[in-house]
Length: 316
Image 1 (cartoon, helix red, strand yellow):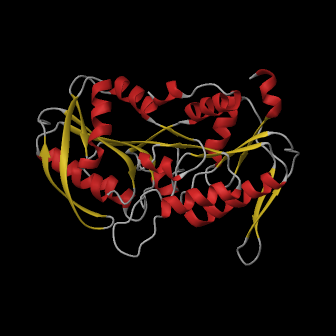
Image 2: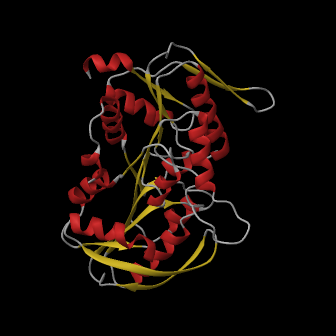
């Protein structure tokens, strides 16, 4: 990175230390020194252990489980860096928590994605780098620049290497059709949609498959997998329509509650995920789950933001 590295500092909270380490290895930089501990009553304590005055600082922290702890940890680290006179603080959130609450779906409910954006900005963030937001319009909740990266280049490379011309990209619901169509076009594959009805939050019932999947390798594409209800129902529906194999891809492996058991017992042959969120021990032991790293992609975005170069080519 040349002389630019003298002004660049990378810090990380406790949410995803392995990803932060891989990003630092890509950048050929050491991790910034910081103590992130808790008081006996559970309050989070942050102490920055090195001089950041006038530096361009990037804080890597996914707001995954435990969501609220990781969010407060991030906010306090931003505040500590701001009060230590960092020149610019960029928040690197590979997974943006609360993104699913991006609009009012009922009376008297919060727009939580907007509130998180406000908290980050007030704390002192000057830019946000994130990945595969649940809804792209969340970028408009910020009054600071937001780079919403996509895991597509990493996932597409894996699909090209492992699946042939028989592949068909499947959206598990109508909302993901645009994403699925873009993937299908990039690897010259077919496109299908699962018609789904949701009865309650985190509960879904897959219905019909729209498109031809018979005798093909079905690849279900989604931005995140939470309890895996939608995914496993979709996999069963695709298999029932005559697909030879069913695989799935997602950017964010939330995998809460019964998700790992559902994936293990499902019709899916594999679930390809990225490391925006660290896997639990149980998920890591699941033979069906394959993890791809987005460290190089995020590291390149950090370099370009630091140097003032364009990040447009990373979006395709």
